[in-house]
Length: 158
Image 1: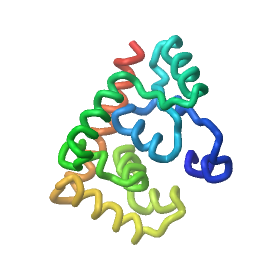
Image 2: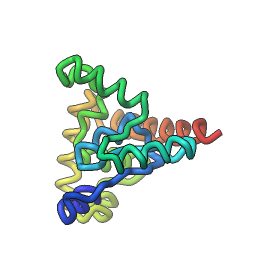
Image 3: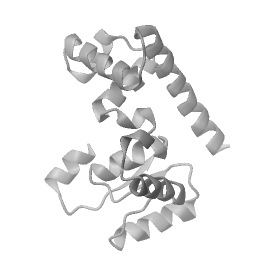
Image 4: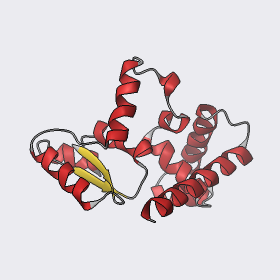
């Protein structure tokens, strides 16, 4: 959606307010054209700071994400330092999350309006990028990521 907004309105400022973990999505959002990324669990004061920074033409990321991105930059942007999930394309990550929610290849294909063969190809790339041996490991990792994402947002909200 962000890519579509930026394609139709290139000068439009976009600040993403999301329930999803910033370590996985903030850099993706900025690469897609967002001017900032804030998790919904942030204090209202931080959301206001983000809005003001974006309106001033700056990019807003949490201090934690700024440090993380600066470390990556200092290391030459090498993929060696990446969380393996960061190596996944946006589509692969979307499919990985759907697998973690219990969807099979046919259901994912239907939801994303793709062929089952395309989904299977993405699954193979995900397994390769995450160094997983088989489909069972893929499903287990995907389920674990969804559990972790759920507990992260529950613990941050508490």
